[in-house]
Figure 1 (cartoon, rainbow, N blue to C red):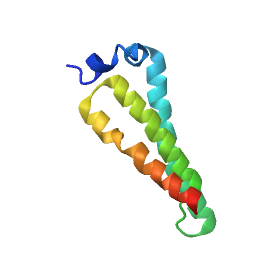
Figure 2 (spheres, rainbow, N blue to C red):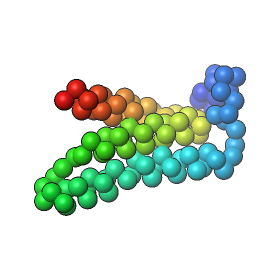
Figure 3 (cartoon, helix red, strand yellow):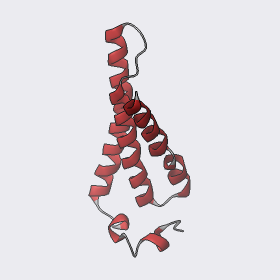
Length: 100
């Protein structure tokens, strides 16, 4: 049973087209989001203390946004809900960094 497909397919048919490109998009979003921890770890090791560099928030935002897009493609409510607020939260952190 679809959650959003009945509502969105008429305006975004590409979102529900089955292709290997969607798998690549999902993997890219996951890799981007996961790479933030590697970047944060490397920066912390170089500093000798815990550091959260600005690039951490950029990777978080873009990785979560791409993962949300992939979740919408999958059209599974638990996955969509799990991803829905992440771009907002990470985007807010980027906004706060910009103001600083």
